[in-house]
Image (cartoon, rainbow, N blue to C red; front, top):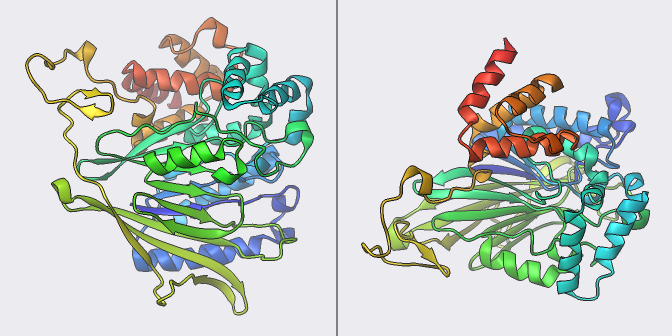
Length: 434
């Protein structure tokens, strides 16, 4: 799998609305031209992952431009439009929306908790309440409208998203989009280091023959619970991509690789104005106990003279950072118990009926391109058609009718997967598209 990793695009209104007066457009044009050349040499991109700060101030107009640019970029590099994933950054939070009393109070109570246990308890309490749960996401409204067609929206009960793709024979890549912006915009102020909170509610589950990849805007050192998050990710997520710092980095560990993408449109006030991007290649090699994941990382950075993107080189002068991580095959015919796989015996295992089949993560399994295209088509319908379909299939309740649309139909689409109703959903979408 070949992944384009971007972050911190920072489409800024009103400048980005007029291409002739957008001073950042030439940097994006240079990136497009360089990427086109790399695709010609390496092959098409399989997925685009954006590590937050798509917008600059959470303005809906910024997302309109961003979506158009991302779709055009996907077409340029041969990437299916259903293979774009995004997470929110602090610039994707509308700070004015965070100044209303319910949001300010909810964020303050979580931030001011005296211990990690108290903070987690308070987060659960705020999320469980109808008003404060919604208030924590008021600032994400425009982001969610943008992200809903990619199934990357976040809301109470859905703090992060999961999607899956096949990485190689017998190996699944599970992508987790984590939300580090629950406390962003607190009191309308800028987010300082150590002022944000991920929480144990956003976790990564190690599973047999599943490679976990996380996308998160803020790296752990910006989080209140950063040490715990760092430990969790390094143990459970083989691949980690971050943004926010506007610094392009790679760390190759024995069991994980971590990338920071730099930024596409960084702030011009920074001392080091260096737009950058990464191409990450992941592949499976070997079999059985000798199986491993091979990693090739291509890091590119803008230089002003001569103007263009150039590869970052290793100390030996190589343009590609090559690494591999052991990933022995695991038996999956047993029953997982306490993190171990028990041997299959007549006493411990019986062939399950359909009703008691092993659980599959319904949301993660919706990551295939065909389902993501169906989700996109569903969102393209009129609001009345979406509502009729969801009610006809029993995917929403009367009490959920007034939820924000990204949440209302985000819940409905996951339920369709859980209940095996995606085929019926597609039939109803087909009928309304005619």
